[in-house]
Length: 125
Image 1 (tube, helix red, strand yellow):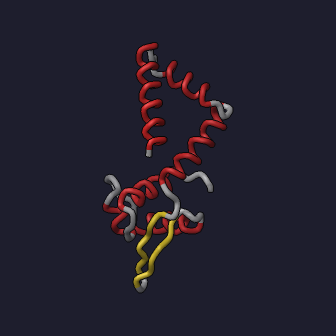
Image 2 (image 1 turned 30 degrees about the vertical axis):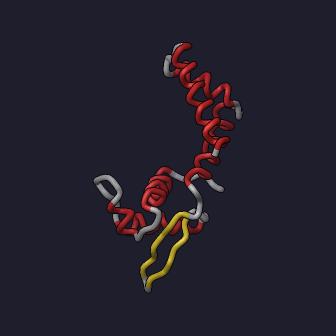
Image 3 (image 1 turned 90 degrees about the vertical axis):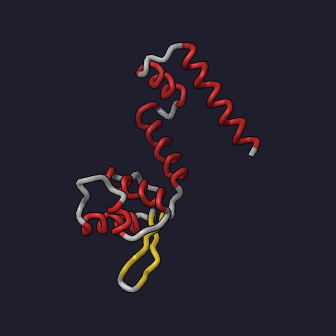
């Protein structure tokens, strides 16, 4: 899997949200000022070549859909991010986050409880 550019990621976010759509459907979901049709079409074709997007042909039109699940990309991206900025250490990431956001011990405790609850919920499913 390759890391996406900002423009590619924006389009993938839309496709993950709408699940499938034509280029015009993607453009409708984009904020103003919206890019040109050809720009979005080119980015979608790049995503197709990278293996992120598939399509169903309807004559000359193509309905696009994600081939990579959003959670899979998030996991890939975060691992690369942690590796590049924090030497792959989750502890360093959390420590940076806590310092950068001026979290106190009580807030860190709450954060840990949320993490534990989420992990418990996942193991119960």
